[in-house]
Length: 371
Image (cartoon, rainbow, N blue to C red; front, side):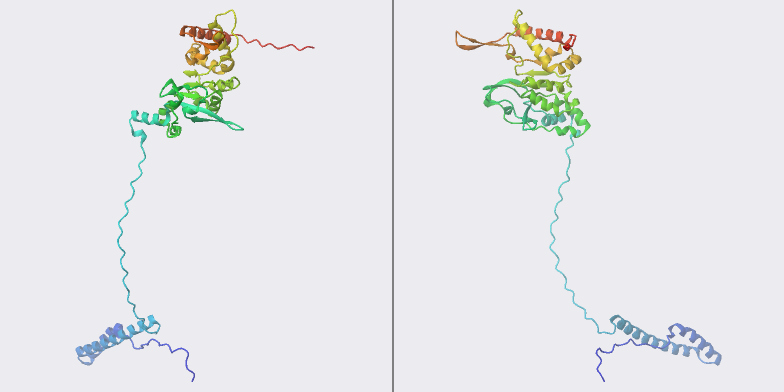
């Protein structure tokens, strides 16, 4: 005979004996009844029946356990239990402390006095907001610079600068070189912050190197923002005749301007009108120059604040009223300075001439064509 390739599988033992644990009671009762009818002892039959049932129960239990084990292992040998080696416990690490929760700076919970201090530190430059225009090949850009960057050092060894809230003439070496970094984005935090702090930013002095820088700066602002301006200064040598008109077209949106300071000379050095006092002639020249270059702003200013506001708003430099001439006897230039009385008379003549110009009737003269 050929040898089997695989060993014969052990089958589970099948027990065909009748389980009398369920039907035994019924059968015993029936047998008892019969035995009683035949006159046999019922107690003896009951005890014998119980012993038989116990033997059957033990045999069935052993057979069931064996069959269940064989069914679970499919008739194969038992699997040895492996010893489980306990894993070493990891050393407990100290808990990392959580960082404290970020608490934002609650600005609106501060008293109004402290909020005002915060606004001043973020929005106000103690040396004034100095603006200078830088141009490339295509356009100009207005930038906030330090005091030392707005005027060339070769113009004068001393400068008239706005330092710490006042105008003073200081040496070039003492000019502050630090630029205060402003944070106008603070105004966009909320409507309440905007209402409380917007006046601090736009009412402080704005100082421009020339009217070209003023024009470039105003191009970036909305008319509503331009109307908040209160203090503007044009520095020495900053009056450029062909650029001034465009700047004052945009400045007409600021009729509530309180101070327009001119550190430069706007009047040209031409011969004065003969037959009138010198103060009157200078005043007439100033009126003609102002109206020619600044008429959009002048009309808005007079309409809002009256004709007297021109004398209050415009502050002219002393060079407008000084006379410089060459003295051949001493072979030197002589600078004739005016008193305050003569300066006031020149300004009165300027206001009178401006009123005359603005109240005139415009009669256009159309040349007739020659046929």
